[in-house]
Image (cartoon, rainbow, N blue to C red; front, side):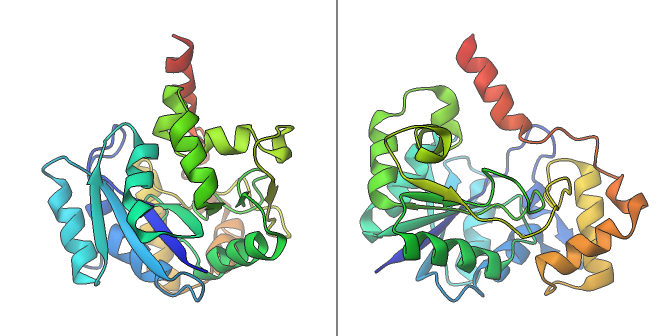
Length: 253
């Protein structure tokens, strides 16, 4: 069995340009993100899927310094970028992670992988019912499901966000194409933001790393935020999944 993880990263960002290249104590958010993923015990290979933009060279250089391969593909058709990134790897399962989650927890990654494999499911995430903080997002799906989505998905929102075609047509959502399930944190952390979309998100992550370091668990970071309401309020005003909502609005037009 072969499990390939792919994290998508690009320099362009409408709300916080170059966010993955921002540094905390001299280390880029992208490097922090990648080094945490590499602690996973279940992933056989990690790749970075970036764009053909000239600035993407900085992303590829960070990946290369960590011994990782990169793939440069479409800026807008991220589904195609994912598919092309892994097709030659011949994986059984693909793990989708995004680089705006610098504090992604390798144990959460492994938990979602283990659940997917144990139950022989087409798709599993911890976001269908969000009980983890935003920023701990993990999706695991079969290569067969990815290929079917790549072949059949036509909506702009499906192409830009990789997995909506799969989970919208899954058993978890009442569909029939894919069998899916959700992994829960066992608690109620879904209202917390540990992701980076805007400056206040970056400020919060910087504060957490300053207090707890780079190697804490997701729960240690989340509990610190929960017990410091003034920190939680820093980014509570930001709309969850705003990028996907915008894509859906473009579908309608």
